[in-house]
Length: 268
Image 1 (cartoon, rainbow, N blue to C red):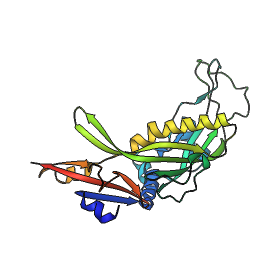
Image 2: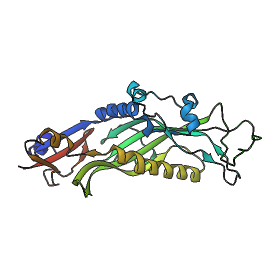
Image 3: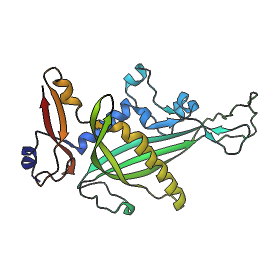
Image 4: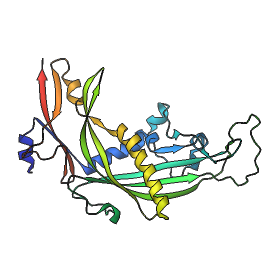
């Protein structure tokens, strides 16, 4: 649908190019590195062990915010007392691509990129601290033993995700109805991991991480901007413009852009 036709059928119209999204992503990587970097407490206090260095904005350390989300050690199953290993997990790079698409997708994701879809290409790295010597003394108090390590055995893989955008309506008892622009995953593929069972297990874990951790924190509330600007003048409610022949998709992913068409509802 031509730009002017769609814009004339909505009170507000906004669009952002994939280049803008990628620039914002780089900013989030620098401002909220703990969303993309996970590891044990030992790794968090020895960041030189990470598989990929983290470039965080100076304000992160000035505010006392972590650059790594600290996780429990990886347990060695069946050990008594328990033994855990240090590790890290990192999403080190990410780029988004809106339809019609320029990222070369793997065959498993049925290229080319589908209409009204986006693709994400990311580099995912992980590392495990394998002890040089397994003859370490047990903890005198029977607590979990985590052998220190001077390096992590690292690997990096390419991850591809395809998805679409939706408006999610959430009813919050104390705040009323909220509307969020959210991303939804339709397919995920790791390139060239063997055997197939290992690849499927890694894909399942990464899919869960993206859908349960990253996407819920990356959703955007539609009403935030205008409500705060005009709160002393009127009550502004922003509602996505209903889908119609004039606006067949809302949100729309097309022409390397993510577009949103909004209807304003104003009351005193």
